[in-house]
Image (cartoon, rainbow, N blue to C red; front, top):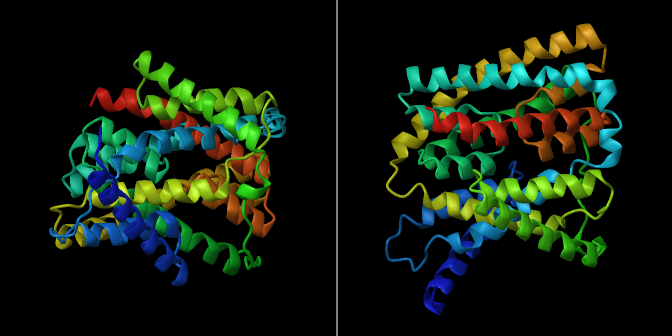
Length: 345
């Protein structure tokens, strides 16, 4: 049990992380709620006299929410398109494998990462998800955070440029793919939280890897795909979860020298170039054989976060179900296979 002093120190750390998010929003930087919290917390924790500590007590409920968010993408409408996109979706399997092991070779060979850290750094999953899995497998979470955040940053910065100047599509505007708290069905959301908690505890009892993430995700997939639940996770909670993990991740940089951070960021760009080449090959294959719109394919085979890719898809009017299914498939493969592969490294 934690005392009031420890709780106040955790809340202060979260407030510092929140301030970083606001700063990133003001500066119009990508992923402000996550990267902003990481930025300010990683600076604040270097001041030893500052009364803050990592808010890890909030980690378990935040993981449950992430699992529910991932599963919420499996709506009945999305599943109706599976047979149309089947062969294109299957390309995600070799794509994920090639991207992961090409990146793993790069980080082990050129940046001297250990195998587990290299594996989770190169796996095309979400930043938070890979940090969670990497932490459970005793990998270097500070390096995973740097690499995964840098990859996402490179993708988010380059894709709009490509879409606007290569394909001449307008990307101005801002649309959310989640509902505000005031528009959320509170009763459905309450039942969803209970179900997610039960799924987490059951998965923990069954000794599943990343139990507090995988368990809620499985139950969320069932209730959303079956049409039993329709309300989405409130946007405010999704942002708060990012602040929580951004703050926790910021503490992983304790003792990491600035030179190492800069070196890792520079090294990550080489991996980004490799990913870009691999993605270009798969985009060409999908476009040549299946004839889907090129921008939709580009977003489907881009190793960015599902939320960010869907947001760009909404703005440019791309085929959202097609893109969503591909990113769900990639994340599903990563979340279920990564822990098993990591244990054997």
